[in-house]
Length: 488
Image 1: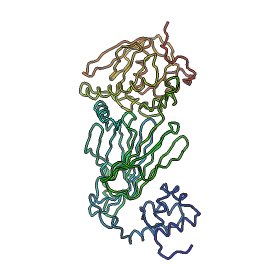
Image 2: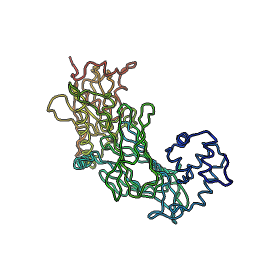
Image 3: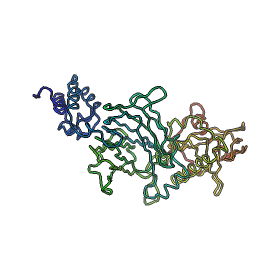
């Protein structure tokens, strides 16, 4: 096709897309953007970022023509939002990409391409993290977070500007709400964003399912050119996703365009994009996952794998690094309040899990299985009415020589059962929240239950205790569900 010398970026992009025989959808897939955005770029309604222009030049093998055209268009652009500093910080968000992935925990990854359109260097960027497990029941949510507040330790927040790690300082630290300033500096260097410059920042964190709710919200607090959200769920959960929008002048309304669903192997991916969203608008994506149990004619019948049901209940699953390392002990009595909060979270998890399975042998759960790196566990004896056994900073002090082998299950890989040798009696050293130390002897079934949980606190899974050559069996082949272990 013919085009004028010094053609605009829009004209060059359309030319090179046609030269390479690509549809708008094909180019969008290569650039990892929405097809509608390609249409906006080629019509000149959108200018695009420098990073996008460079990617397009490489993908279309344009030999620098696209990048040069983008620079010419950028220099001559009279768009007010590019030539005049917007109100506030002087930051313009060219690209705002948010990705949420669920695998029993919720993993959040955020990417922002920023341009400083102001007159002063930018040295920090504000990040907000908020959770609400029961959005329609505020009192229930408040009670949950009072007992088990969101912690920086579990979030494991990381942030980068390009290849440089970003430091951060806390602005607000509340039970269900956090704010931090990401700093354009680290102990090695400073890298402020100067007027006219662009920078890509990325940050990530994760939250357990027991604290996250069935929604993800994006609020537009800075002038933004493109906002995109991607949600990824296991396909066997049969996820459904919808969304709403609110603004300063309008209440909840359906999103103007629905989330787009695609399948990637065993994952269902929902993506949604909007261009030039108004300031102060809020976009909320909500979802429903297949229930852990469905009501059938004969009562509750499991519709998920046992492990997936446990993941839905907030149990960290096999493969998470937290299960393979020793848990951090409490400094007692100095950290008594934190220890009590962790024990409360464990008891809440016990209640959720007991709705999914009959534990005829008793059960236990350790803090690492909730994504909490602290040395706490609880054991529920099989006898009705028996008090829970609380284990803080627990370790085995003595083991009997006599052993037996019994099948065990683990909430973190509940699809299988393993034949595990354990001592018939152990003595465990553990602490109370007031710092006092106890030595308690456990025998037979309680010895096995307690030993299993103390192993979790040491980063040991029962597979590591099975005899050489032995492997766990599928739970479908196990015939002892709901029955107590037997002893001669």
